[in-house]
Amino acid sequence: MFHDIDIEEIEEEFDKFVEVERDRAFQGLVEKEKLHDEELQNVVKNYLYDGRKPLNDDIVKTLQVKPKLLQRKKVVLRVLNEIIGYIEKFYDG
Image (cartoon, rainbow, N blue to C red; front, side):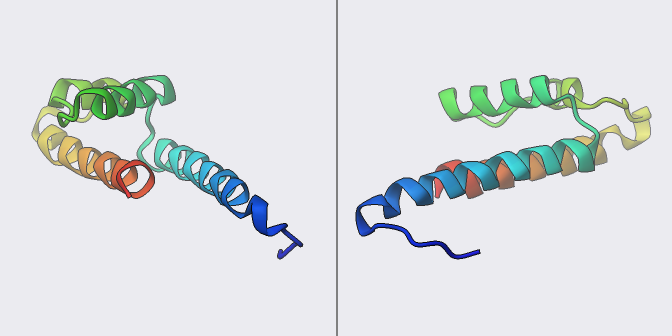
């Protein structure tokens, strides 16, 4: 797992590592919550651009399987929290 890294390459290697982990977490979120990856990318980009939390309708667009009306609020909140957690971990930190 460990390989020799030149001291000057530490930052570059760390950036590569973060990029791989960010992509892995993104795909994990897509699979776990059954999301459309393009719609999720749009939600993340818009959040990063304007700093506002996505609207419920934006979250619903990411869902491959639309929840029943009674479950919608719960599902949207859970997915929103997952997205915000992902963004805070990989973009705000």
